[in-house]
Length: 166
Image (cartoon, rainbow, N blue to C red; front, top):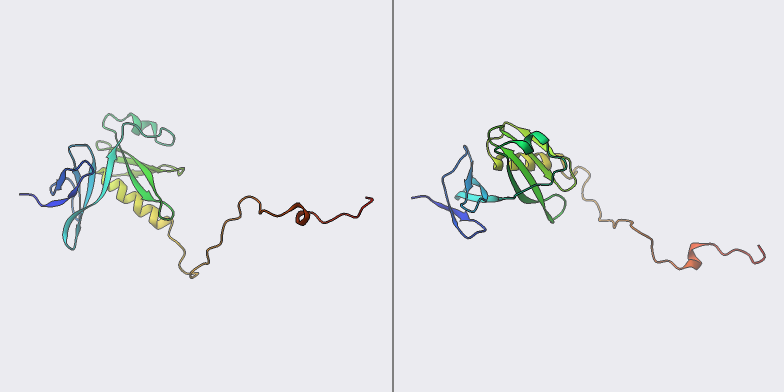
């Protein structure tokens, strides 16, 4: 008997047992989604999902990895800045043990010695968080609105009045 670790978006129950070692495993649902399963204090739990996709944006990904016979394509969501989760694309080859991960208009991040697509996800998130950590040493900074566009100021206030006759 396997332990229930979560539910897939397709509605199927996820049961423990899958590839991986240590505190993480990868479960593949019958629908094709991959689930990153982690050992937590309460036991094994599904912590993230990678959804398969037929194609990924071509820009940025290496030609070699796109041409790999076993290349698998997935996406997951991640909040790059703030609370808005954006799609992050993963191109993975099990035979090559290589993955490339791309989000928004960022350059592709290449990873070697990757055994699982969920490992590539975790490595990319670790890289992102280590390179885009907020600066805490300066203390809290005030929220200042961005200066975009023009302020609605009347014409009389924009130009100094010129004397008549000039």
